Image (cartoon, each protein chain N blue to C red):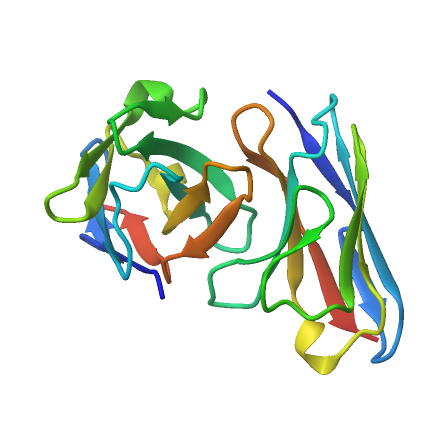
Length: 106
Length: 120
């Protein structure tokens, strides 16, 4: 199984901050990586696919990068609506998720 | 606009079989462009992919659950279903159905999720 490890598990930030979340795969997954945002009581929402492609309707302050085993999700200027939990997911071999990163208000 | 809706019992007894159905609207489940997946999330924990099905009936399952999982599709009703046998308290979770883009986009549409509790 391919393991996905996110860091940090929790991130405290303020509105306007630049935020970066890292996701590492236990083996190469090329660019087969997606990022999701989940708010309490809601289903996850697709933000980024193929490591760096922005899903339609997602604000441009979200961006993704990386390939192989190391990936990042960046929020260029954190907005009040962005406080949530973020998950990475690989879809190279079977599908596995990272453990999540909670972005909370500082 | 594609919508997915899970339905099924919210309470299942230990050792019994959990059965859920996902109804897809606003698009055809017979499309060759998508797989249809089940994903679950225990309270306060992360996401676990359970398995998926293609319109042809081809399935892929999470190896950790494979012995207990069956996913089926009913194209006439635009539905797909999940059966998980021999459930225990560890199977208590919110269960989501989701559309899995064949071209490699991840899960682009999700149902709202349904809580299934395993308890006697």
